[in-house]
Length: 299
Image (tube, rainbow, N blue to C red; front, side, top):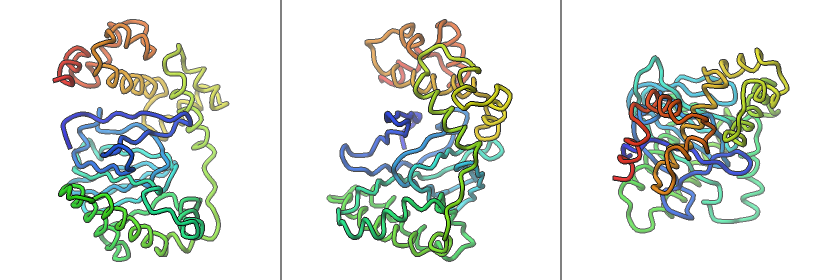
């Protein structure tokens, strides 16, 4: 993975647009350190794709739909489609990991297979994630397949995407047969606070350029300001305004790669009324000024 930090772009339904490795082929594979993310944490997001995390060195905390996990060295994590999630540092320690994101459309289209096997897996409300710890021998094959996919992408041989699609079929077969998934008989109800949290985050994603405050965010979740702050603290360890500003900064970094837009215009587009405050917040988060970041990204 390059030293370029991670950005998040969104679909109209507020799900993340995945920057696939090759245009038109829904495969995203990146390896690197958690310190590549500002504050060693990613933004809370969701997408249609299945996501897999493979820990190489260190530990990482992971939040999925209101549940916190500790991923240890050697562990893997499978996250089902459309589940809100993000990773963050364990005790402010760095972590070397690989992120693999694969869309179900990568598999060859077959109506019966899709309806009988793939759709039930993706729509299984009881399958939010599968934590594949090193102590669990039932997940050895899942770790093996993830390592195979990573190696195929690294070698980049001709038609490696087709090879990855084949391994993805084996991977999904393991998930479908896994006892922690196949034994689920009834869906788990989503926490009410998690639904409120998702609604408030969606509001921020849609309205970040506007002048919005704590009352606007809490109204989007139909809760009081105090409850709004409690929910954000519970799920993101941030205040609503901290989350809002962090997302605005992420958007601004994408815009800084273009010479056509001035830094003042970028600040205003992202909801910052004063460029001085924007520059101060940017420096505090990324340890460089917007101008320095622009020059670095263009070079």
